[in-house]
Amino acid sequence: SEVEVTNNIDYSKEGKYEIVYKVKDKSGNTGEVIREVSVFKNGPLAMSLKDFNLDGYFETTILKETERMDDSYINETVFYGDSITYNFGYYLALPTNVIWAKSNVTPENAHTWTVPINPHGTNISLGANAVAVMTEEYFISQYESLVEKVKKANPSTLVIVQSIFPVDAAWDIASQTRTTINNTKINRLNYLLAEMCERQKVKFLNSAVVLKDGNGQMTYGYAYASDGIHLLPVANNKVIEYFRTHAYIEGE
Image 1: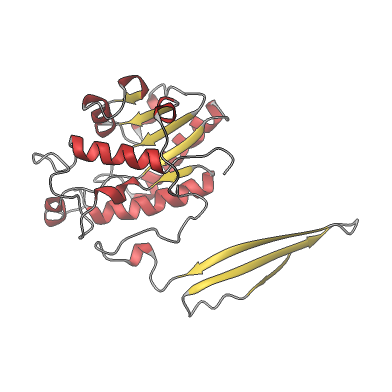
Image 2: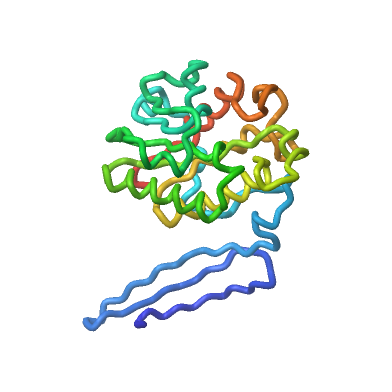
C-alpha cells in the first residue's frame, strides 16, 4: 500500500511504455523500479498460424541469442523428455549420456518417474504426446508442478523449458476433432508455457522457430513422413544449434 505507481500507458496505441514503482520506508530510504511494457494490437493468441510469434513478450524469460557455446555447455545439461528427445541421441545430435527420455512421457505421467537432476542445468522438453488429449489448463498445471519439483529437488539447477515443436501441415488439415494434435494448439501451449516460465522464474527456449516454414508449420523434410512429428537428423541439428546459440547465462 506504500508503493506509488505511475505510468504513461496508452492501451489504444501500440508502443513501449514505462511503469514506475516508488516507495519510501520509515527512515526515509527510497527505492524505485522501472518496468517496460509493450502494447500490441494483437497478442500471440489472436495471431494467425502464419503470423504467430513471441517477439516482444516475456523479455526476461525467453532466451535470446548469445555467442555459440562449446560442448561443455551440452555436457552440463540433462535433456529430459519423450521420444522426440530420445531421437537427439539416436541420431547423435547429442551424446546419449546427457539424455533422459522415454516414449510417451507427458507432463502428467512424468510425475511418477524419478527425474535425474544434474547440478548445472536441466532442459525439459515435453508435450507432444499430450497436446491432443489434455486441456490447456491441465497441461500447464501438470507441467508447472513438474518444474516446481525439479527446482525443489535441487535449487541450484538452472531450468530451461523447451518449446513444443511444430508438426507437419497434414495435422492441420486433419484437425477436425478435439483429439488431434495441430499447430494452433501447439502455438497456444507454447505461449502458456512461456507465461508459466515467467511465473516460475525459469527460462524458455523458443527453438520451435527454427523448424517452421513460412506458413508456421513443420518445414518439409524436417520430420518423418510417416508421422509428421518426430524429427529427422537435419532438424535435430538445427534445434541443438539453436540451443547452443541461445544459452542460459547464469546471473543474467
